[in-house]
Image (tube, rainbow, N blue to C red; front, side, top):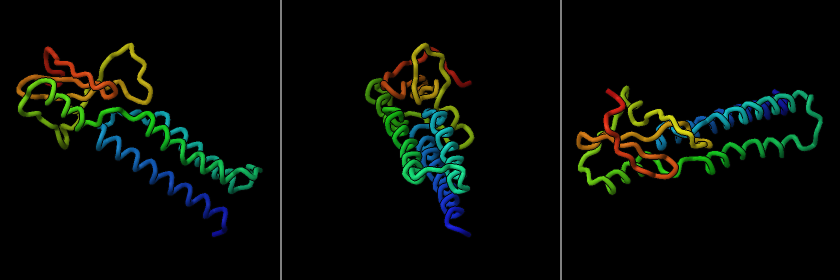
Length: 159
């Protein structure tokens, strides 16, 4: 395997690992409310640029530095755009503001109940139109992932 093929292979593997880490952080800490829609195209362009660079179609001395920039952009976008509150921090907000004793956390097949889709006129950059959802003492709450606003629902969303 020549040097340029190794460069492409390393770029591809690093891209997959980077995406895996960001996707895991999103699903584990933010229950999927971070929108990966901006990061996936940048990572895809990175792989295409790396391929074209290794095949000699991209004649530039800035190829490797540009790849370094392509690696930092998704990380920066995630750090800047991630929700202000993790799911656990939002849960703590419900405990503190609503005087509840027990919050039900959904696991496994029911983990989709940890967020609910919402309709909003608000522009949510990097955050899906979903809020964190909590059931506590037969009451139901939504928490905005960016502002931390806790809203009590009049009826449950998930039946």
